[in-house]
Image 1 (cartoon, rainbow, N blue to C red):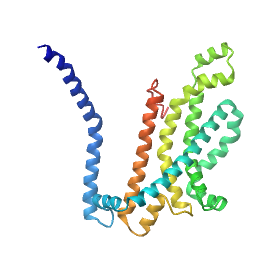
Image 2 (cartoon, helix red, strand yellow):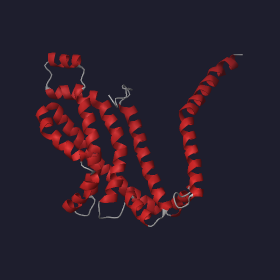
Image 3 (cartoon, rainbow, N blue to C red):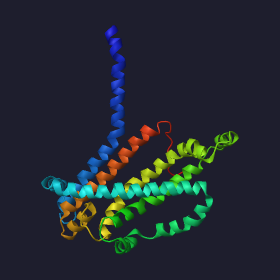
Image 4 (spheres, rainbow, N blue to C red):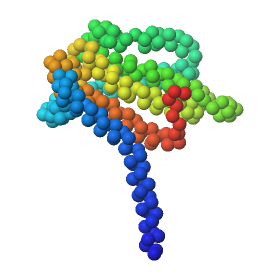
Length: 271
């Protein structure tokens, strides 16, 4: 009897865990299965529109070195370009929150740049900076800059007024208020901006490879070359790797947010 009583909670806990896993992963898994079946049916009946999934898999398996080399180039553009855009966006948000005159002076110019199509800017960047990687870094950085700036600025200004009054009562300096109040409080907004910026970074890198002439490397360039040759398996295999890269970045960001912002479960997107 005692053994049965002792094992009962473990069974309930295991059952709850299995049910939770099915509840969390079942719907997306079913969606992917349905999409894969529909894709395969369309590809079989329209071979000049979509390649079959096994053709895409065979393309990846037949020349992994080519895909890996181009993936590394795209990752380099994402890390350097998006990293610079994120840092610049956050630092400018700090300057705007501390010095309102900076926002009045700079924000109209930023809006003008952000509403200008990036595909129109890229060729001019090539003329200005040459045919190397720098124009691609700049394009990728521009794509992530604005969402990072807006979310960071909103977070830095979303300060608990009562806490701010306490800091002022204690004669805290501007640096102490920023370090101990504004910076921790804005972190949920910063991560919300990053959640938008990370997928956009992959999009920006691919667009930069589409339109910025020069080094023919990266998954975006591979998509362009394969599409021009009507090589559908290579085209869609490259697109699949771009999607996988974006999903991986978002997943890593979610894990990092859980680790750093364990005290905040609030979703600030759309606030």
